[in-house]
Length: 461
Image (cartoon, rainbow, N blue to C red; front, side, top):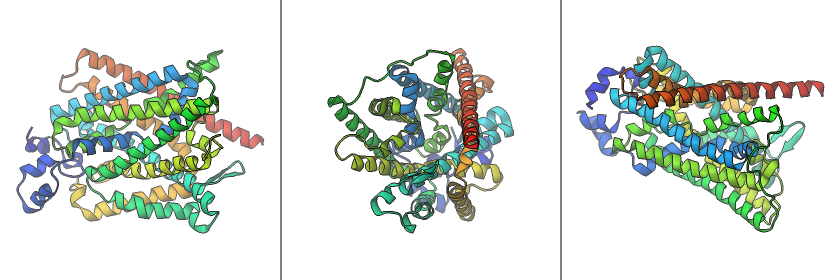
């Protein structure tokens, strides 16, 4: 497929953040040629780490709670099925991309549904990623500087180590994190530049899994862990409804579609994207399964919605406080390194929304710098002063995530503008839409009920 065909088929707004390796290779000109010699394409391992980091974010901490709801056997089966379904949706997306040479997710949506389709996708990515990153920053603040709720203060790691001081307060810690970690990493223009930090991020997720598994095995040998629930208890209709509340967590556990094209564009060999997706999903599934199994095995029916909160208590083994701090610090650093991968897709899609007819973002340093600074400032202020903003993102985020992961790829398949979809593809697409809509309705209802219940409880108190 020639570069010219891609450029003619899609306007500049659909271009990737940087020219692809193949576009650099095919053009003449000093600046681009020099850039090409500096960057010969992303490696297989780097691409796997970047895609895996996109997948494994804060959602990993909610997975053990789904085991409490579903039971170990159905819960673990659902994690595997969600991985296969995600693989199928990415495969459909990339198949339609190859037919028309689309360099981005937005370009595929634009090919199938025109201007409004591309804009709708970009809006969903912006809404989803802004919400996710605000939550990441809030969690980092909670872990390092503590949080207060219901009149009770939960000490952060830094408060536990050094006592309460101005310099380990929430505002200052997040300011240092934003300026010292987020800003330098957000200034990279290529996804592949983040491959080393992504590798560290995946390694830290593995550290969490290893520590959790180690504690669970020690307590199991000592006979301190009861037999976990293998299947759900369904005594009444309300219990059946509760089972569905676990579906949204599993359905959105592997959302990575908005970063597949940027990673694909930078590969040395574009044909590697399929094994890269398979390897990333296999790696993340392994992390998810072990986290869910050992997390639920360790805490049983006491497993909280965010299993990280379970590590605030005494774990009942030697060096409990050291292991608890190790888990929380490794997780906070993990989120810091996940942040730039999500930020990259946010900046790219917001630029497409606001400056669709402008030259590529990579060639306009002023626009790149201003957009990066403004987005970081908005996320920092939101996480510090309006943490309850997540109440709104629980609704919009749930909707945006399922659209990105399943509804849009399924809709493209059903639309089938180039008549390449098979009968099985369309059946799978219908199943994806039904599953996505169902999980979204359940998520919105559950979040609305939870918020209403909390407000009612506080007003009655």
